[in-house]
Image (cartoon, rainbow, N blue to C red; front, side, top):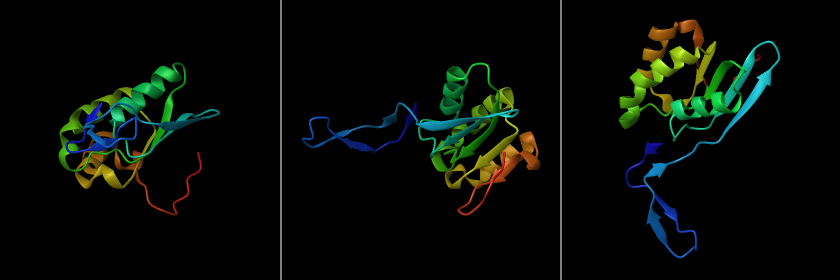
Length: 131
């Protein structure tokens, strides 16, 4: 669960807006690549990269995570989650972390120091990957 101070959502009955500062879930797509494991595609990880990866591990218990692809949402006020994210990633040990726009340069640097620059791949529009 991740906090987003000042965030609102439309009420379920459609009559106005209500404060909604917590993102309880994150949708992701996981593809099981033969001989490799899961490629976990996350959007912006508003619920937290850790929650996304834990959910993927619970859903596909016997399949290793080969790569996580998407925004890790670790820039700005979310930088406080960086040490725990690095720790969880170390336990999961993905071969690649393909990090998007909202990851932030501090997180990219910390991840590269923790896992080696060869495992950290900046994500950008038009890039192609082959797993």
